[in-house]
Image 1 (tube, rainbow, N blue to C red):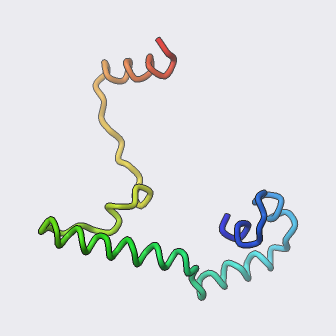
Image 2: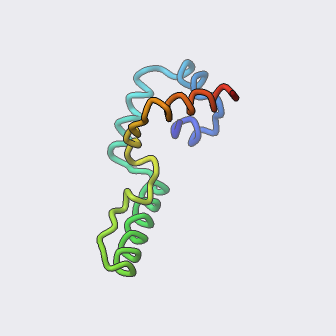
Length: 93
């Protein structure tokens, strides 16, 4: 997705069909060596924000606690009645 965005392309699948596998491999290798400046900035801001909030609250806050995509949510255990209610809600009953 980042490659397509950088190339100004909206259709990722079409772009991947048009480039050679060797070109894609080169891009992956380049990404390992030259990190995206935007990604780096986001990481710095996230770490700085965590440090400020940790200082304000007086307890350690990890940077990934501000990133809802950092770790997948753990499945929530439901009782049978809660499961039935959730299914009914999905089907509008």
